[in-house]
Length: 372
Image (cartoon, rainbow, N blue to C red; front, side, top):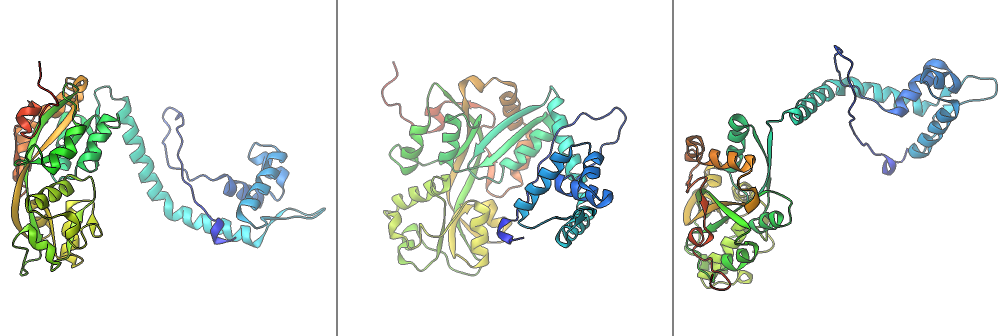
C-alpha cells in the first residue's frame, strides 16, 4: 500500500442507550469488521449474513477498500473458500494490536465527550465566547467563572484588532483588548483601534491593568532606550501584526522617533504570545523583547517597566444585560478575581465589572463630530 495513500480519519456518533446498559467505547471500522467476518466464515455470502447485509453490499465494500488501499484483500477461486491475502492478514493483525492499546484511551475520550455533552441538557448552563488579546489573567477568570458561576467561557486568544473584528462580525460575544494609559488621540494605538469601536453599539467593561516592558536574560545588558534598537546590537523578538502588544511597540517606537523598518529583524522574528516571546529570549533565539512582567517572571527573566496599560472587555449593547454578561461582570467585581490577579506580577484590577464610557476610559477617544 503506497504510503501517500494512507489516511486515518476518526469520527464519533450519537446513539440511544438501552436503559440500564453500561456504555463502553467501541472502536469500529467497517473494513476490519468485514475482514474479521470473512476470516471467521470463509465466504463472502456467509460473512454478509453474519453482518446482516447482502452479498452485493459485502462484495462492493471489498472492492472499494481494495481500491482505497491499493492492494488485494481476498483470494478466491471456483469451488474454494475465500481467504484473506497475506496483506489483509497483516492489516487485520495490526489493527487488533492497535485496538488493544487504544481502547483505554478511547474509553477515556468517550467518557469525557459524554460528560461535556451532558452539560447541554443543563438549562442553567451559560456559555460565552470571548476573543481576546493574549493575557495571563484571563485563563484564571475562565476557571473562576466555570467553578463558581456555571459560566463556561470559550476563550480564544487573538490580537486586539482581530478580537474587535471578531466581535463586529458576530464571531464572539465579548472581545478583549488593551491600550496604554498614556496613548494620545493621534497615537498609533488610537488610530488602529478607533475605527473598530462603535459608540452606541458597543459597551466597555472594566477588568484589569497590567505592566509591559523590556524582557531580557539575567546578567546581560538591555537597550537603554527604544531608539537603541536601531543599532542591531540586540536581536529583537516582536509580536505578530494586529496584536495589541505589536501596536504598543509601534506606539513606543513612534514616541522614540523610530520607524519600525529601522529596527533590524522587526518583521522577521515574531511570536504570537507573551509566553512565546519569553521562551524565545530564554532559549537564546532572541536577546530582548517587549512583553508583560508576569511572562518574564514565569520564565525567570529580567524585566524593566515601560508602560502600564488597561485591559478592557467589549460587548454589544444588546448583550450587556444577558445572563452570561451579568455573570461575567459579577465575577469581575468579585474579591476572588482581585485575589487571582494579585498573584500575577505586574497585574491588578481596574474598575472591574463596571460599564465604562468610551470617553472616560479611553482618553484618546474622540467622536467624529460633536454630540448633539
